Length: 227
Length: 220
Image 1 (cartoon, helix red, strand yellow):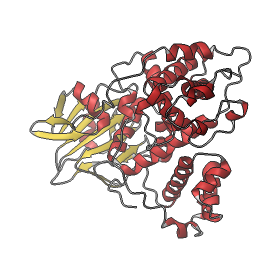
Image 2 (cartoon, helix red, strand yellow):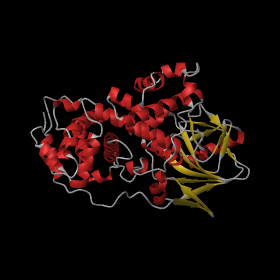
Image 3 (tube, chains in turn green, brown):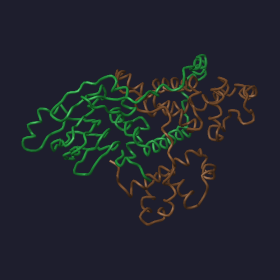
Image 4 (cartoon, chains in turn red, yellow):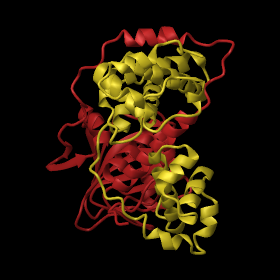
């Protein structure tokens, strides 16, 4: 099977996403990946069918002691008039984000959040736009200019990166649009952009990065920039 | 048994669709549902706001949604709030259900999931934050061809696949065994296992993807 996106979330992660049990900020990165990945769209549809079948085959609750008043609940529901609003609301044009003179299109899942906020902070060849999302984790758009390396770092928590434009290369390989990278505290890497192409990513971090090498350790006080 | 005194059959008689395709609610219906029954019922609700068809959906799904809610919330009050909100959406938005896109049970599950998700977010007073509408697209992604399944037929028998095959989730392995080893049609498997045809197809695709993942590890 050919699909342009090569790095996907694992099936257990997709399962939790479909169930709705994945934490919201991680689910957001997965949702944005799915918007870009026909393969995972199909898988998630299949997983939803599975969940629906499980619901249909579920034993109804045996609650002899406190059977709810179903009839009253149903009566109150059918007293409401049907929704006459027009069909789905989610079909808007593509949403874009701007950094200096560049324009990037963002996936549907990020559209509402991106529209709420575009405040960039810049540090050298890198710019960060923190989105109003995330509980325990920090969700931001990260712009990295061409031919730029992010110094080698360790993750104090989990780091999820979804490429939205351009590409990232690290010790493990190259990641293009739609590819998702998940790094755990055990992973150390030195991501960089291609010599002739800048990059926009979605970054979800559960803890600040820790820079490991020489002078870049001086960046550690600037952790909050990435986080 | 709840609601079984409703004159369900009579109401369907007045509908435009053929009434003989609908079975009355009875005690056996909890284990024995006809293919397409809930999809038809949703269409009645969508087209005629048919209360009898809705009563049938309600009496089947509400107690199951409650069980689902108890599993998710561990709290009866919240579980029932989820049931009420979900079943209200089923009533009010029935015409948004598109039978060409999937089963009624899938649609109802996704509504319940989204209701539950937004309930939890609201409780954490994060109304402006990520919502179910952001996470789950309620529309059609462009169609893609259903490729990839067939060239697996030969590979499936290969030694490499066998150990992974054994580790598939039971539900998927059962379907895969019937389709690939016993060479049954998808419809036959659906009938034998009393699961919707869509579920048979989904289980096959999921199982193939798991096998693909096991052999060719490109997932994070």
